[in-house]
Length: 380
Ligand SMILES: Cc1ncc(COP(=O)(O)O)c(C=O)c1O
Image (cartoon, rainbow, N blue to C red; front, side, top):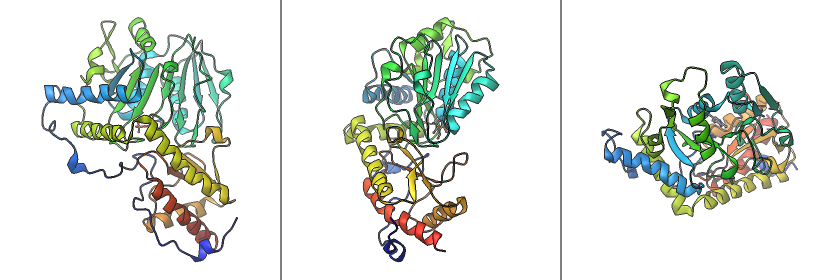
């Protein structure tokens, strides 16, 4: 539907918060940096006060996410990438690997596995932007590496039903734009990673590494043949370094980022827990969905609604790449939406973050601007 009033009438109301980036994502509503508990700053992270804060980052995460007994949560270096690579370098090589990739970040893990670790017993299951590989073909005798939500294509796995309960291999899941926004079947996942700057609107710096008892078992029984940088080492003398999962980080973390993460967790609790952040994100997606349903020039990149991400919502437009860029620029100049161009390796389009730190009202106010910008650009 092309409604000319959308061209003629420049919307009057702008989103109060124009931050729709897919990472770092918007800070939570009413975020105030001056309210952070910074009593740990300027102190050793190994002092009781620092260890307590880091320990809380682990224990409160486990509690809020409802992790099964025996799952460990650790704060590790180098954001989500650090957590994924640490897991792959520590665990892979013991058996074959199925690695699934349907966008840029998954493709990065394929490169790590085939070109850096140089594993040869590898099956690469791939799909183009907008789709996912055939999940029924995954071999759970192998270790399985996959991304829960492909941030650059806006395509997620539909659920965990395809993951075998009696798997022999481990499932290693990069879930950085899914944890706290999507239902996660923890029992089906042996390694889960995420970062603070996505769904929680925290600060980029550290990764979260969650390990199932089976992952720990592998760590304690398998010694990879390659050198292991100190930053990746999870075991000592063949035993898991349990301290890492109580806040005794491998090296020095940013205690300011830790304070910010604890603040984000408190916000999740206040909101009603993970079910509330999931519901908020889904309601946000519905705003975009209604708009897409009403306009024939815009569509989701995800080909199947069951696979459509409710965090990194990727949209394709039936216009040229230059015109899409002009829309992104126009909305930025108007102070209506920042950083909503698609990821550099992804097909041309828009990517609008719909995680829980984004307010539904702001998305509602953004939609008329999208229509206005579209008509302004195509009629220029
Ligand atoms: C699915 C996925 N994996 C990995 C990364 C890299 O995360 P980080 O920058 O936290 O290392 C991102 C970042 O957007 C991502 O979306």
